[in-house]
Amino acid sequence: MDRPGRVDEYYMKMALALARRGIGLVEPNPAVGCVIVKAGQVIGRGWHRGFGKAHAEVEALRDCRRQGLDPAGATMYVTLEPCCHFGKTGPCTKEIIQARIAKVVVATGDPSGHANGAGLEILRQAGIEVQVGVCQAQARLLNGPFFKFVQTGRPWVIVKWAQSIDGMLAIADPSAGRYLTSQAARNHAHILRRRTQAIVVGINTVLQDDPLLTPRPSKGRRPIRVVMDRGLRIPLDARILLDVKTFPVLICTTRPAMDDRQAIVQQLQQRGAEFLVGPDDDRNIGSLLDELARRSIQQVLIEGGARLIRSALQAGLADEIHLYIAPISLGNAGKARIEPGYLMLRNPTGRQVGPDVWLSGLTDQGYNLCVDIPKDCP
Image 1: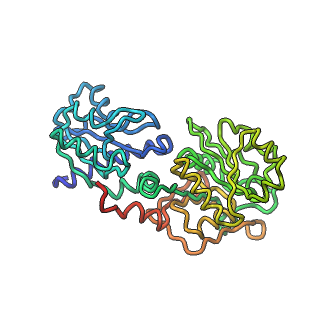
Image 2 (image 1 turned 45 degrees about the horizontal axis):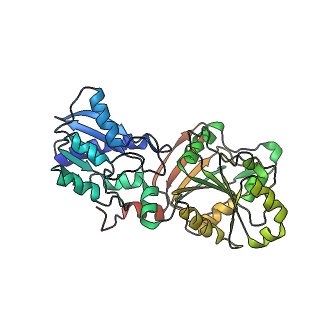
Image 3 (image 1 turned 30 degrees about the vertical axis):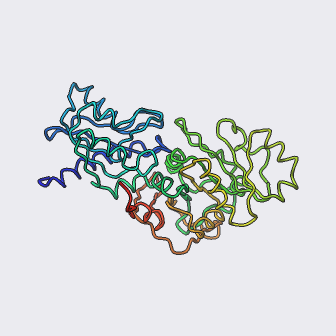
């Protein structure tokens, strides 16, 4: 750490590690971390701990004060441009200026309309030295969903499935077992559900598995649950309809189905379910994403079944992939393959979860959106 650039990268990576602690708790806000350094010592750390809670910069300043340390004259490392507007919390720029921070090193700018360099300029006008671009690619990869939504107005699409070694998604004989993967892997998958604001499945998943589609524990997260149901076959006793007031339900169907099953529609509406009428083909995924974007939903999780996942992959809608592989080959005892064709994961990661293997990464589309930094990005 003899060069200034290496020192900045060291502390920014520390801030990025802190930011990751907020994933699954802060969405649709970005995950942000902050480190305050004075005289070569870290005197404050903070991260955005939850939607509506204090931002990372404020948390780091509070950490300094809890230790009886004065942040005046210190350097602040933060993974995203500090906010300068009043939202659920006050502007971080004001707190930074009042703390008499001498320098702010920022990983990447915030392209949101209420920011877009404004926070950086306020700090500069206050006499604070500002440096931008340290670990910029890593910071954008951390918050890909946020950047995609801000820059394109479209939700970030996560596709998740579990399979056997030979690519089967289910056991053909239901009496032989419902799940391919272990409880540990299924618990791990709930982290994804907490990240997202919408969970999407096809009607066959509802008919065969009767899932709740809720994050457990929810930790206050209440994603909308979406069922792709062209023929309006959802049973009135489906478990997904038991708690519509807490976890909303949106049924994507077609006009002919709505007209043919008016009595069912009325009963579902009385229970609180909403309807989205779309085209009677694979384009209905696109119309769903348009609707979710209008509702300011930033992250969408597609969980199954095989046909829906295949359609999303073939249409090039996926930004992020999560795959759980059970240590079993089913052969003729299995059913339902995805066969996505050529698919390479960018920025991949993986590890063992219980007896299963978890792999995740970005598609080319998701990766390129993160690393191709717009020229007008502050």
